[in-house]
Length: 75
Image 1 (cartoon, rainbow, N blue to C red):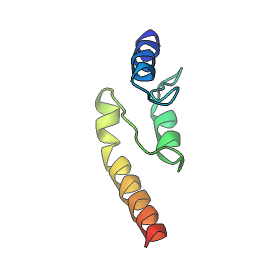
Image 2: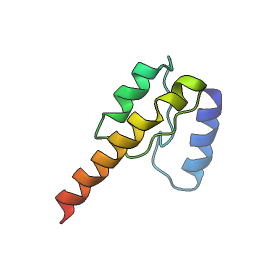
Image 3: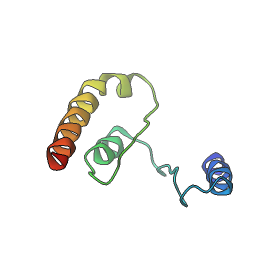
Image 4: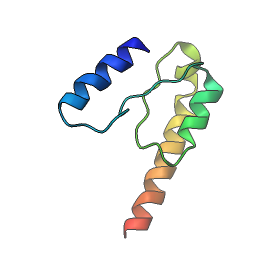
């Protein structure tokens, strides 16, 4: 979490909003899926081992669904 603090400090110096970069205390597939399903999150970077790779199709499907939903609101 120290790295995230450093990144946010540098971003703040450039005028970025506070807490632009965040992390979770307990990374897991369940937490990742909860974040993916949250409409308030516009960008998510998930790193990890084989479990994250196996989960990529679910991530893509949900991302595609959210993009379609957001674009339908704009049009």
